[in-house]
Structure formats: structure tokens, C-alpha cells
View 1 (cartoon, rainbow, N blue to C red):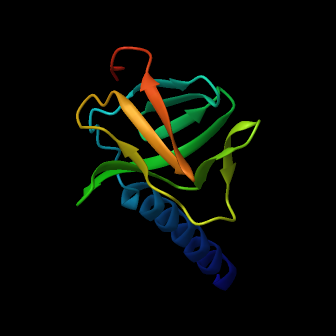
View 2: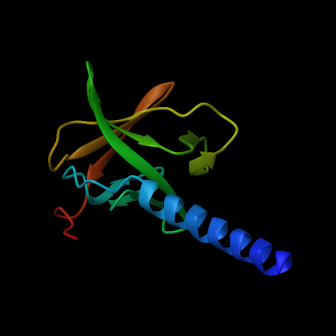
Length: 128
């Protein structure tokens, strides 16, 4: 009898934990930033539904916010420029803000890596 109760408690706890993780996750809010942005030296950045696709290879989640300097994208991991290689994701560095020129429908993303690298919109705004 004790064994059945213990198994039931473990199962109920597991289901509750999974439910909390699913429901406590922040929903993605469309800030109007979705689109494909490109830079001749560094490649492409596609923004859609809180996911940033870098050069059609790596995906990094992000959030959009506004501070005193204007709108920006804050990726989960640092996204920067590596000389002669292009865009790179580095989980060991501090995350930097990627600046947008405006919201909604930005036309540029600027990444500061010593000097600014500007990615310009190459497609119309993407829809969900």
C-alpha cells in the first residue's frame, strides 16, 4: 500500500512540475520586429516569434525591449562578429544588446563590435 502511495505522489509531483514549466514560460509578444536582415560581410539574421536564426544555421531565442537609447533585441546568448568569419554565438561572453532603428518594422539592426555592423532589412515584415 505504501509503495502505491509513493508512486502516486511521485507521478503527481512530476505532472505538476511539467505543468508549471509550461504555464510559467513567458509568451512571445510580437513587437513588429520580424523579418530577414542581411550584411555583406557577416551574413543574415532572421527574426520571428522570439527566435533569431543566424545564417540559416544557429537559433537563439531573444526578447525585444526599449531603453533610453531606443529599441533593442536582447538575445539569450551573446551574438557578435568574428573577423573574417561573420556572425558568432558565444555562451561564455556577456550578452550585448542588438540595436533596432525603430519599432514596429525596423529597417536596421546594429551590432557594435568595436565599430558598428549594420544589418538591413532584405524582406518585408514577416507575419505569423
